[in-house]
Image (cartoon, rainbow, N blue to C red; front, side, top):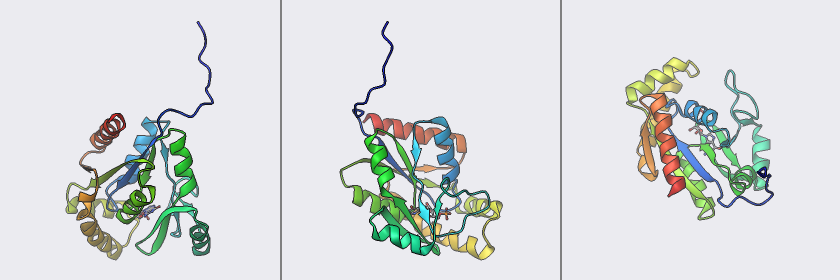
Length: 201
Ligand code: 5GP
């Protein structure tokens, strides 16, 4: 029996771009981490930001942490697919990684805010298959408890994020699907099913 060989040909189907948005504290990062552990061939878009790393966050893994000057240069050079001011900082998506990975047939998970999701859809046009998912908290009360539990923001900052979350939730209808993160495992499975269905469709 002949052994399979590695082919140099382009894969038949380009990957899909999955945009996940959620108010701060909805578990988006944990969900993305779980999905990547279960699908070793999927990739995560690593954003660039001017905010400081939180405890445990690593440069080049969680974000590319850059200075405002470096960010402005990346923007001027056209290196970002989209960028947006979120809270007091700017965030942006490096473009070449997304385009190259999709071309290689890789699925990419992109956790960005609502403005970024809209800009990305516009920038990519019909050049990529994009699935947009919005993750909702079970309730605003639960969201507040989660934000308080992670102990990374001051009470004033938590209040501000809650108010922003309420505005963001109003934008959920822009997305292809919404998923309520009541239970982490179930949410991960629900998202996997949605991605699989979209990929087949
Ligand atoms: P955090 O500072 O809590 O990691 O993220 C704050 C917000 O910025 C989140 O809603 C997150 O999804 C969003 N965000 C992260 N990276 C990007 C990006 O590259 N572009 C945009 N538009 N938003 C981003």
